[in-house]
Image 1: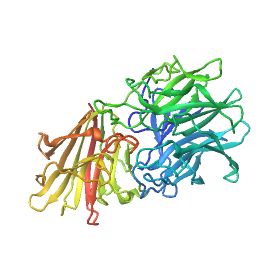
Image 2 (image 1 turned 90 degrees about the vertical axis):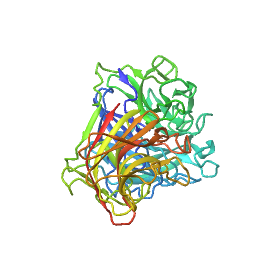
Image 3 (image 1 turned 90 degrees about the horizontal axis):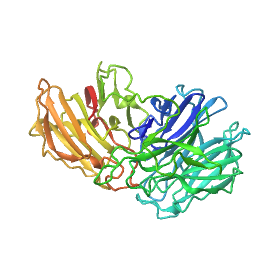
Image 4 (image 1 turned 135 degrees about the vertical axis):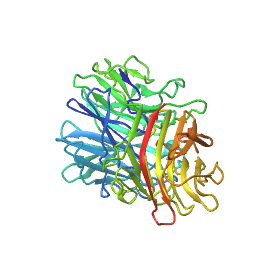
Length: 536
């Protein structure tokens, strides 16, 4: 069986592509660097992260991008002996404008170096590229209408002004011909995330609708001509949980169709798994996969009927889920950052971290403040379980309270908790808590352990334990085996899409990782000996 979600934790907007016996899924990474995650599978059951292709400054520079901007909704395809990746770099979030720039990169293989980006357009986000069987290529994206009240985390339908289609010339690397608005969406509204495929002479269009919250859906339409008109699916939506409030997989929408070599049909979609009592999805938007079937009317349906996605889905083979180890230890012994980790925005990682300055350690160079949109020394991995424990040990000698380093449960600049080592003018070196539980727009922090707890010289062990909606920090000095709780139980549920200003206010996911900042500008280093992630 396929066990959903197949990509747990922050892995939204899944675009799926099959090449021979190999399947690939590309997902959005937003402000996290390098851009776009690509997972690989040969059985649709077990998936392995194999590439983040947007890794050079010439391909992607997100310094200054607001939270929840950056890489939106990539589309991965294969044609003409190479892979094609289409993506948006969004430069604005709040307000009427979006400034969404769309690009194409290519590569002969997933693992290869990807090409320099080719700019396409900026009329809207969620681009995709369709390779027709006559050799022509078509570029799609939603059109953004700024003449609306659609801002501040409460999107309105008029801003999502239909799906645009224009031909792409692969030789001149430019769009050509008329721009057509081919699909206005269903009455659910907020039409985005277009993907085209062709079968039995029909052009099938799937889109995401309803916003990326609890009304999300995969909407389906078809036409005999690529430019339309498109008729709606008999059920309107192929996949949605909007009317099934007790379903395990909520917020279901935005995905893509794929066939096995034997012709079996599947469709990806993003989803969220909310926790009671506040229905907050602390793992962000995850990737799931549903088995589908074609019926005599030439329409696609979920296997077994209905529109509500399932957790357990029949796989095309008898492959067994391999699972991941419950406990992962990162010793930072390699010259490369472990693949599970990413950082924020900057294409110049050598300025924020090093694995060679001190062997066996991850060194963070303290840069801008926790929550900066430009150059922040924060290296983290996804939270993949509702309950987990993370541990690290840090060596850090601050000279002022403007320097800090430690462990953080992080979503964005308005939603984080951090346990840090810093300096206090009366207590000396201390371990203390910085907490910003969703205060928007001011980003005010709370300090729930007063001035901090004095600690001896030498390495300091730090831990965070999350159990569903609760977070407890711990610390111990080198040589001690007794973990000391510090501060109150904090609200871990705020580190979620729905935390803070609520649904549609942000839509990435929770990370746990390491940070250092030095707002004196002296780049005080902090050395981390290891990092442990333990599912509970």
